[in-house]
Length: 368
Image (cartoon, rainbow, N blue to C red; front, side, top):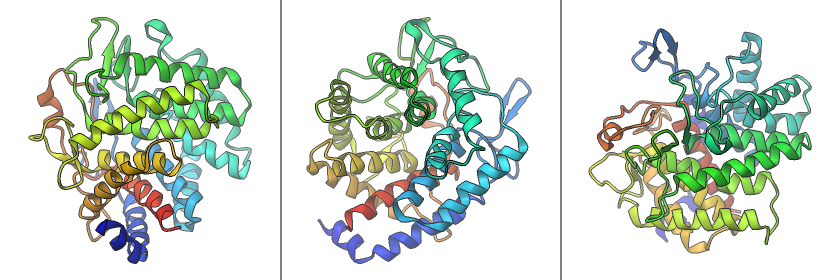
């Protein structure tokens, strides 16, 4: 395929774009407050880099994975500086979203054994196990800074909260954490997978027993495309393991649907099955990363590599000269109708930068 040859010849260009995206990441700031969230007087900044929340948590993970694979000192410096500064400031209140940075912290602790990180890993994992709000059937309720989201399951939870719990469980030899992570994946699959398409709905309410707008929202789906290969690797699930095979089957059905709905540009629309909704770069990057990683790990057939390469070709055009990733939608709550998702605003966000870095970092493996 032409894109493979083009990128292979220009490997140094890919590396240059990664470095520019990393440089841009640390400049992101909501300077005029246009994207601040107001929850009855509680103001939450989702956009600025120097904040402890889920966009930054995903950003840190992308940076640290880049460092692990490439030994890029720039990426490591970004992660170390962020954690040093945030620990001096003090940790924020615990919720499903503020748990997200603990995934990168867990990988950092694994590599450095820096004792400063251990109390955070222990205390936050214990909070998930014993104090985090629960839904019926003992699901992790998607409780954030805003409304309590009573009895709600969201697909975001697996990325933001369950992956860190699983990694901490492996690090600290806590089988109870590991089993909890497995249970949460199975419960979320039970209630969020659309049986007709294999894609995922954004959320489920036990109160009213429905999937809200039944939105096949792109970024929510991309968390799953990332989380399934990651949990298999984190838990070191061996070939033939029943949970591993269950996860791979779930991923395969999603990827087959993604192949069907991919736009000719290589990107995906923010509502995957609605070509009138805008194309969205962060979700596309998440899909490209998850699909390509699953191919590299031989979880899915190599033929799906073409889907990931087509997405990467489209993403190249979304990276501005200064490294800012274009067409990234802002944080998105639960929508009661499909128009809600189509009207979500677009701006530079930490996860847009890092998911795109993550996707192109995985591509670098293809050059080996």
